[in-house]
Amino acid sequence: RDTMPPVFRGADDKGNPIGTNVTFWKAVKAGAKDKAGKPLWYKKGIQYWDGVDATDDGVLGGYGHVSSLDARENSEFLEDVMGELLEEARDDGQKLVSLDCGAGIGRVTGSFLIDHFDECDLVEPVAHFIGKAEETLGGESKRPDGHRCVNFFAEPLESFTPEPGRYDVVWIQWCVGHLTDEDFVAFFRRCAEGLKPGGMVFVKENNAKDGFVLDTDDSSLTRSHKYFMHLFEDQLGWEVEKHRLQRDFPKELFGVRMYALRPK
Picture 1: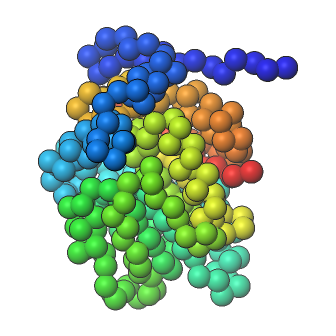
Picture 2: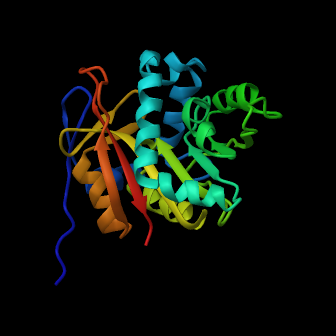
């Protein structure tokens, strides 16, 4: 029997109610567009980040000091979920490859992914962020293990298509709030095509307490855990193999949750 999909109610960052996810995204789709016919929702987000410094503090909204805690728990989570698999692949002489989505200045790759993967690719729509990432992380490897960053894609996630079958892990952190539900689902499907057999998608995002919260400054949505699970399980039909809340972040921030996803 068909059940009605769950509906999530939202508010903006000033606490004003803004209806349901269904009506909200419908309004975004029907609203003002750029010359290419894309909702201005996306342009507004880019314009906000265009004005932000290409530093840890800039991309983390003044919370640059949480970066090392973030990297440590990312490593633990990756190890818990995929450690043995990655080790076996490496023992077999396979090259391990990651894709960092919404990579910003390369903070997640530089502090975490590069330690686990032979090759790292980064995709980021904000020009001066990805420029900084390439400047910091590009070129020949200076690491004893020879791990290096290979590709720096300056492209928005809603149009980006990963190379088929290239990646062991696609890591998506603090960026999918900018995607409409429709583009979110389509992007994750393209990510699945980019995975090697047995590869996984990891997501790390803020969780609203319930429903969703609209950030009126940077044109993004903070979804609740239930809203994410609806997108992952009901919309995509994927398996959420594990999820875990980040510990030790400043109390005034949203809760932050990591998800390990297996496409089906």
